[in-house]
Image (tube, helix red, strand yellow):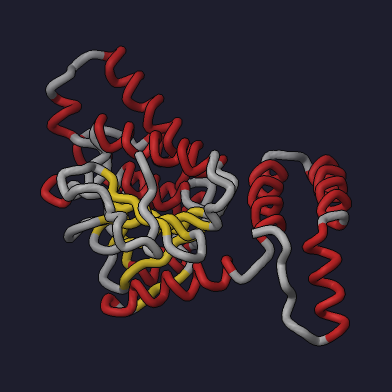
Length: 274
């Protein structure tokens, strides 16, 4: 799945009947846009496969600095495709589907560069899980979030994994047990998202965040994302030992020498690794 470059007019995003559209801008920001608006961008088998393929490709591309996960239509993502699930009433099928979904969520976490969810409309069940799995999230003020499986008799067990790693325990349980929607403002207050933007300013707010990240050393950003995820699972003493080793190695990078010299000289840094 080739990534198109804004800088080359001869390239274009993938056709409108594709499940995922890709675009790479001049800063190295890849935008992945879920393109199944008539199905509220549900995580069908095809959508999960397309996301997995795109993330796998991006992981091997050293020119990518940041990823924005977006969606077409009125919804960001309505979770799993319930019609598809009901059409396959088999435990082995469900096990495979949820394992595949878990692989996509872990691919986001394990991607070397930050992933930003750009959320409009609703993000429900596994769609909310998708937001929670991203490193950062910006939402339109009208966006709403829920883990609503409980409303159809299904506890959102796999979404709970990502949700509970973002919001406080009692907040997570409230969402999981009631299935009720929370607003973008609540989502920000609870730690599920980072920023709330007016609907018309969602693109600009997301751009401001990617601009800030791309202005930093690529080495530092990639080092930081990998380190942050790993230390969270460690006991405090082990986390400090691990972080100290990573920081010592990071100090030897050319970009750090340049950054410190620039700070001392009171000039902008000129990163050598992009």
